[in-house]
Image 1 (tube, rainbow, N blue to C red):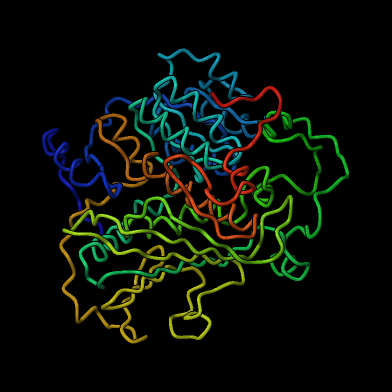
Image 2 (cartoon, rainbow, N blue to C red; image 1 turned 180 degrees about the vertical axis):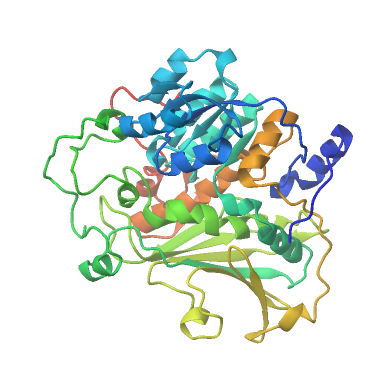
Length: 463
């Protein structure tokens, strides 16, 4: 249950910042909405349209919309009906060329994953606040570039993994970091979604396009409302096909554009263990699943990360070394397959020395000896030390207006994104990889190292 927080003074905020920045809860609660932000929206259909409505709902509430951009002219035109005073663009590069610094305060990036970094970096270089959808970037080197640019810019940032702002996640972080379930050396995360290369049977069950072997070779003219060149952006050129790439989330399957389920849901479901266990850079990553496809991400696979000891943000001493295992599609933890835990289709299982915690987005369950503990009777729940968020979008707006930083700011979201992409790399090369985060190097695999960064199509450069 959320608790209302009183506005705090700058001194209180600085003190709270120092105490909470390690685990990503650095929120200023305030009610100053007298001055509206001038916001530019890069992508305004689909997920972009949802973000647009969250920041500037119909009826004139919310913030000022000063620019609308989308490769789909129809999406721009629909959004423009609600915000007729906004400038309209189809290419975000033209938006940054055209807009003066005085015209906008913040940018919301909701493009396809493979262009996140290209739409975000110019905004940071202009010292504009940025809200970017998850995952933060298409790859590891890009995530580091964006996190470093955000630090230099000193602006407010937030990645769109909205569950990070829930009260439920905060209560779980408090419980785990206070030692409520004991030291955690093992955590399992699973999701049922299977975006990727599917069998025909899986595809029919999911009412999905069947792509089992190769990308399509048939070429269709792109619709007049779609700028296919800008949509492709830095990705290698491929001809448009009516049945495969658009609308989303079809494009999520392709390595050139995303990493299937992992790049999307990893930002949500790995978020809580990353936060609660104060995870940083993994030492090793090993994945298993079907034979990797050169063009398509897997529908089902698993990956195991090994992390060393970390400082506990909430208590003296260290958290022990631990393993995190990710499962998607048909793959599940042994405890789930054996029926020893509730059969949640998606979940996070923290195995502590005192008890096991099964978490979902909006609730959690404590188990001892595989039995649910009613009302947490053996536990004294820790005090609430992490302030509740006013909401994922509201948090961003208030921080832009009043100072401070958001919970899923790019300093936090960057390392989370890097870790998620490492699982895909380990899967693609089919071997356990050793990771040197400081130098962005896969120590033991040249073929994996080549996937840390990608080559961009001629005319595209991230700088």
